Amino acid sequence: MTDTERFDEIYREYRYKVRDYIRSRVGNPEDVEDLCSEVFRKVLENLNPQNGSGVSSYIYTITHNTVVDYYRTHRISAPLTEDMPAQGSLEESLVNSDMLERLAGVLKQLPEQDRDILVLHYYANNSLHEISDKMHLPYSVTKRRHQALLKKLRVLLEA
Image 1 (cartoon, rainbow, N blue to C red):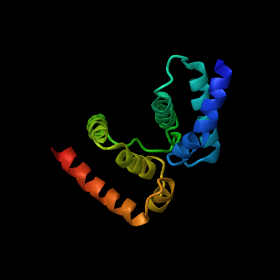
Image 2: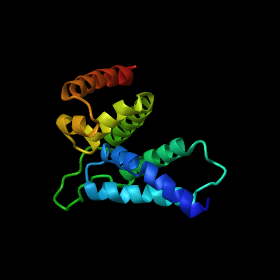
Image 3: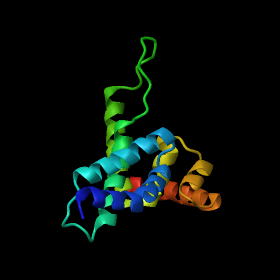
């Protein structure tokens, strides 16, 4: 089997799984399509004929990392204008920076689905209803998990 035939087979088998995974984590349909293309571009570039057994985990890893990279590079920010007052002192910035580092460490301890709920809600500004739709969870489950996550974060951050 040639590399092209192998890639075509992989693409047919995984295209919907990849798209659904990305769609559950990224709200913008255009971004979903771009990210799917990016995933399969990476798969094609790194197609290894000897690696036949771990294709699904390999594709999952590429897909997950592509979504993570997307959120790293697409930070939502507002431009600074001349009339905006300076917010906080250097001391406050250092405290906030320390808090963000602690928060990042705590988030790494959470299961992936829990992290996804927090990222989709607080970073991507999705409502809990939108998150429950994207993650294919009942709204009541999403709401309870969100509340439990906030309590857990408080406890972990205070420790």
